[in-house]
Image 1 (cartoon, one colour):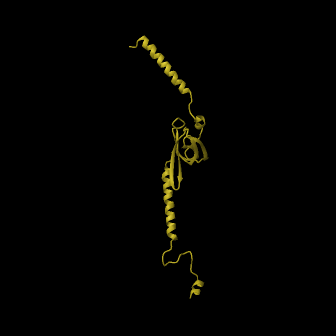
Image 2: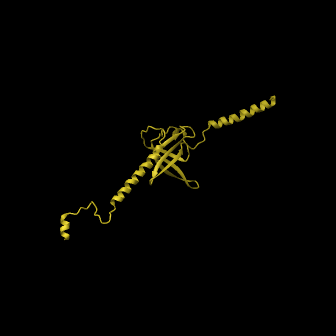
Length: 168
């Protein structure tokens, strides 16, 4: 059973700390322009250039661009929203997951928009690997066709009659 003195103490305690939380919830403490980031219309299939802040020395930052295809967007526009960007560097696929409201992201530029019929483009990973395998096969086949076999004249330089008569 709550005594009258304790109830008053609990009520004061509750009001005091609830007001603190309410006032803290009303203040926006963020270095990111959240309204601008909410309005970003990033969709799967878009090619974007993400400018990310990279810390080199203590307090020194530089901007580095990561341009690629957006594979997925998760959690909509809420605080934990993320998007996945994939690009191919020297035949190797690189994916990065960027938090939408990260203060380390300086800017997100839209480079190209493509119409896709899927919400998540994870199949691009397998498709890209398959295309690379086919390209490797083509280059290997072309390499073997170009190498001359000992004792056989290459097909590109046909021997004419004038050349044979001059040698005799």
